[in-house]
Amino acid sequence: MKYFGTDGIRDLADKGLGPEFVLQIGKSIGAYLKEMYVQDEVHVCIGRDPRPSGVRIEQNLVEGLQSVGVHCHLFGILPTPAVSRLCKNKQYHLGIVISASHNPAPYNGIKLFQKNGEKASEEAEKRIEILMDCPWLIQETPGIPGSLIREPQAIQEYISDVVQQYSFLNLSSMNILVDCANGATSSTTPAILTRLGACVSTLCTQTDGSSINQHCGSLHPETIREYVQSTTKTFDFLFSHDGDGDRVLAFTPEGKLIDGDHMITTIALSRDQLHTLSKKTVVGTVMTNEGIIEYLKNKNIEFYRSDVGDKYVYRDMIRLSAQIGGEQSGHLLFLDRSPTGDGLVSALEYIHAILTLSQPIKESLQQIPLYVQNLTNLRVHDKNRILSSKQFLETMEQIQSQNPEARMIVRPSGTEPLFRVLVETPTQEKTTHLTQQIVHFIETMED
Image (tube, rainbow, N blue to C red):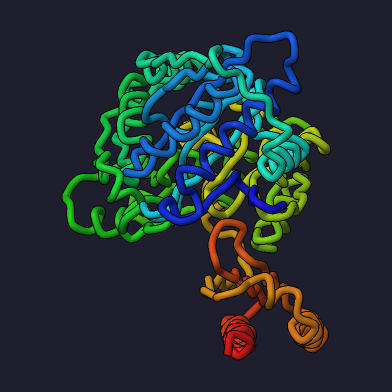
């Protein structure tokens, strides 16, 4: 699509998300909702992370929505999954989040959620794009603008709802460390874990906006690791969010990273042990290590590979009637718990799994025979030009045919000017050699 990527519209706030463009996005979203709900008075809810550009984008967006008669309910700073949950609970016609998730502070974005709390469909995004490019199709309502309602209680409603959902989980003897990425979870995650009884320590809880994801959060696991090495405190569980709170990664008490694939494997085994794993199926992505898939098959749990992107994981989970799915990055889905990825829910599911798993299974999880995998993020000027090049396609086919034992995924990022190069083979030597070969080839295409 022209504007929407794998997770909404995202760009540098001062360039790709300028005032006039965001105003037009607001008008187009509103016009789409007016088409869908002809007889209704349309209400949307809006949340944002603390990025400095968020206030201005919110104002531009609201102005566009109001101009076509849509009523806007402002939640303020709130995690992305909180907006999804409240949109579903209160039956708003649409939920909107202003965030660029794990990206640095200069970026921002706009994510949309349907009435049921799920990510907006591609059909909805396509129609909004048509309206953005054809403004003459939009009927404004001069003299009858939509209203603006601030909802300061939204944050407490989200906290209370999650606490009630996990009231069965007693964390009274647990010491938990959380890196909040200086983002939207800085108050919600500590509050919920505390109300469930845990003793909570936090890192990176500034909400100035400019420090979001800066040397912290799920893209910087070294923050947790370095803190653990520098303190005399000990922790039972350790987690790291991204800026808007839809991701989380876990760590061992010693600070070793536990990625999203290992987290969903742990949770799937726990549910299987408790006889609550629907269809005995887990959905991951093409990035998932083959060793994990073989391990789960030995436990009689089927694993399905989806394309990268939570909306593709979600699509296949629905098709396969799977409860559990997710990505290495820590964007996990538990559809019986939340309509979209919620890093806090993922953390609570992981804690529950560890507390309920038998000791032999816990030990086997620590010894999964993984293939040697390397993921390289390679910054490029024009990823689409490279991807569509005949030379690129032919060379990648040749490398694959010469190395049939290797699994290679070379794809453009859906949110950044990057190529993500994943190479997985049985040996370190082979993985390193192929990674260097592919990276060098792409770099020559940049010249």
